[in-house]
Image (cartoon, rainbow, N blue to C red; front, side):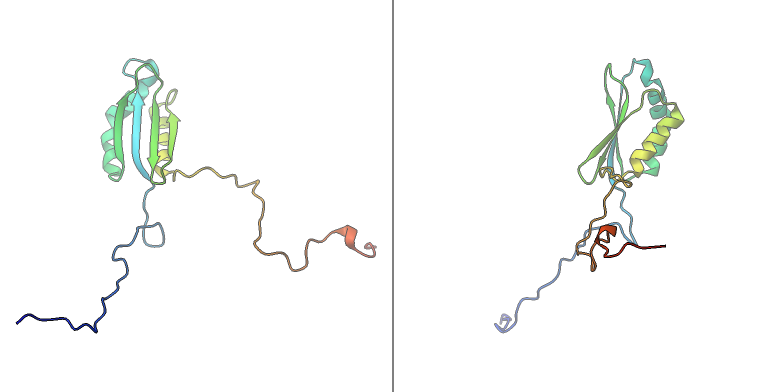
Amino acid sequence: MAYRVPSTTKPLLRAQLTSRPANGHLAFIPQIRKLVFEFCDKWPSSANTRTYIHDHLEELARTNPHVEIVIRQRNQREPIARGFYLNGRDKVIPLNGFEITGIQKKVQLLLDASGAKIKPLKRRTVESTTEAARGIWSGLHVDEPFKI
C-alpha cells in the first residue's frame, strides 16, 4: 500500500539557503578578479616589466590565489597593467619608466583598489534629507544688530 500525503499539509516555505558573500565584520572579499600585464618583447621601455614578470610573477600568483593573472604581448606599445574588478570596472596603469620596485607598488595599488570611481572628499556638499528645525541663521534677519 502506497503512503499518501494528507491534503491538509502545506508545502514548507524556506528562505534561500545560500547567502551572497559581502564585506563586513567577519568576511573580506577582495574586489579584484583579474590582473593583465601587457608588454612588448623588443622595446626597451618594457625591460623592467619583463624582468618583474620573470622574477616576481610566480610569487605574486602564490600570494593572491583569488586573482587570475594574464600575460599578453602588446607589440610596439608601452607596457601596462590592467585590473578588472567585481563591479565590472577596470583600472589601467602604464608601467613605462618604473623600476621593479615601482612596478611592485603599482601592482599592489591595483590589488588593493576596489574599482569604484574616485570621489573627491574636500568639495562634497552636505546634503540633508530633512529641513533644519530653525532654518539657516543670517545676520540680516535680526531685528536689532548685536552691540558689543
